[in-house]
Length: 399
Length: 139
Image (cartoon, rainbow over all chains, first blue to last red; front, side, top):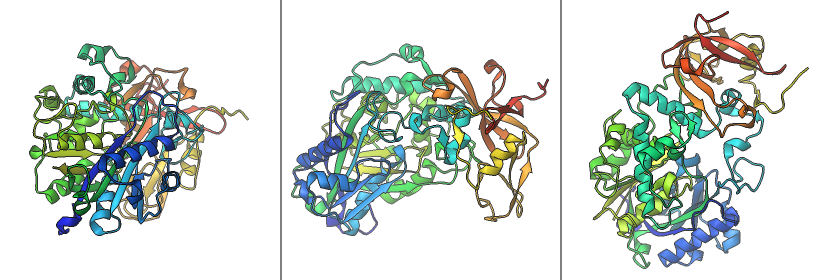
């Protein structure tokens, strides 16, 4: 990932682990985190005591200390959290790869454990299970004080405002979002790990109840429990391990004062066609440092808290033209197996599970190992990104 | 004094308190940089354009246009459950900044580009919020 790094120090993903995904799992978030981390170590063929670094979302409630205390990991040399919500999805791997390639650590585990199911609340805090926005209480600080008194609180409601504007500016139709919902539910229907077993039709999407116009229920990420962990180590160390390594070809982060965070999306110049930040600000560094182009990517795992994030992301990262995301989806390009760029082949956040997007990373690794349930034949390069409506990042992974 | 404990209330800090207190007086005022003249909202300690910390609370004309909107259905915050479905709008103020609010009136009328003007709704003795109605519909 870093320019000039010695070949033996190149960062590689060598282990993936996940728990079952279900609407409600009667285990603590910490227990789920430990299960996923041990599963990733098992997958890699690495003793858990070799872990000497950790990265996580900053909203993760199972801290480094919680995990090493539970798993008996003797010493961490590197640990870091990254904002914010689903924006942290790829940034955890960027941090882990930086640590490994600079020698700050040798084997870094990144993890996310989440209980978000309707019956999974385990405390009064917004990040103690259940719906975070519903648990912020009636006293609202920070940017939310300019939203909640008007009834704007949930991410779906915020995303609806962005989606409506995109439809107005570019002629995108709500059905375009529905077509991506249908594609991902089709992918989920042939993924044994997915929560949603049944494919849906566009009519069923249309008939699903409205959450925040134009967002239908079937556009929304699932509310469920589960955990995911990945291990990043050096290419040199990977040679002794069980799996063929998947390399972190490139990684980049981006945060911008306007236009990315849902809470301030519409700021002084926050029109949709406004300044080129968000994914637009990350893509040149991501692809430039890897020396590849968007059309070289074989499979994309796009953070999809809501289905419209898929076309918006594909535009921002240059997989299609600005304003053309809806037509790109309508062409079938994002649908496995025949699309030019299958997106969220595991079923994504409305089909497989919503682990704050972190389940997208093991799917990218499986695609590059050639072991995915919905395998893209000969996949060599995968794209994974964090939320375009948060402080964010993206990685390109390769065989 | 009447207060509604269930209603989401701003935690008013040094940056935000003047905004909300002007709303209580039924005045829409936002920060205007004393150095470069840029209006800004949400409230912040410095101008993002020129970094000046000098500003005044400039009275807005109250006019704007609907920049985007949604109609919220359940699940919504408990204080709003009796009102759903209800609208949320983003209004671009004549002064430039965008403001999240509601349209007072018929949801069916809502469209992007619609001219609106501010009106105030008293929630309780502590909180009055700026909302908008179709421009020229005052009465």
